[in-house]
Image (cartoon, rainbow, N blue to C red):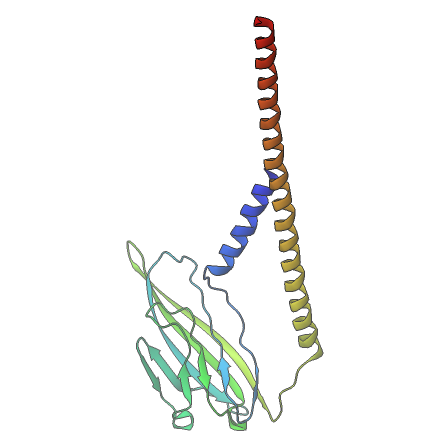
Length: 214
């Protein structure tokens, strides 16, 4: 019984990994000059069952400048670059429908002039049963541009620990499956042995009854 429950838990773990979900993860903040960079912007709905429609606006404030300027607007299915400095270099990498929860954009061929603050604004309309609710979510990304990518020690250690944890979990799951397989096999063998013993007992009883009749 314990093994059956364990197998069910393992199965649920695999299923939960396959099911999609929304998690608000902060954007990366360091880009390399001449390469591409993904500006992340995620705003999850608190209630997934509520239908909604959203638009996304990106603004940029270079270092040493006080005011933001609009650079990108997305309203499904249209994407518009509104700043000539980013012409043909911004690409929508967010949600591919009107119910936007991921408002990420990709910058091609980043330059040092693009270091600064980026603001992502999501205008969302929730279609509730009695009324529509308008929600505005803003997220900012402080972007630095470097000539060569830097990998911090903590990042390297975290990546190593992540792979070690994955390997340990996989070995643990394999061990659990092997253990449960052996336990189930033993249960089947015990059942077969009990059946054989009962059959032998019944046969012996029949033989004894036959001898008494003679």
